Image 1: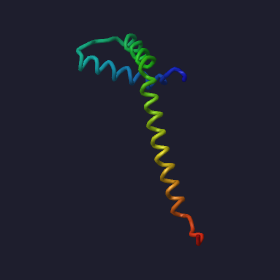
Image 2 (image 1 turned 30 degrees about the vertical axis):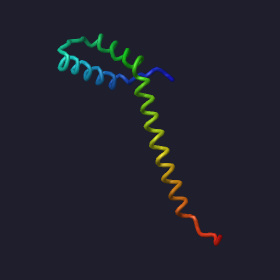
Image 3 (image 1 turned 45 degrees about the vertical axis):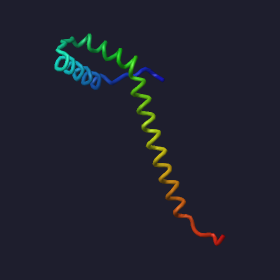
Image 4 (image 1 turned 45 degrees about the horizontal axis):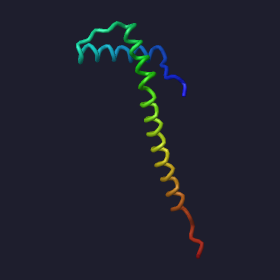
Length: 82
């Protein structure tokens, strides 16, 4: 798996949200540069858990939809007189 990376605009938005959370909830002021390093750490060390869960959720959804398609096809079968 490739390293999790975000486009600059998205990374800036995530950093701002992280800074706001740290300030509001933990009363911890962190600079932009340090916050970007924190985000990089979180992405590297924890990101794969979220990524894998997303894949698992997608696989579950696809399997469910394929089951629905299989059921619909079965209902379309014509009687053969057997």
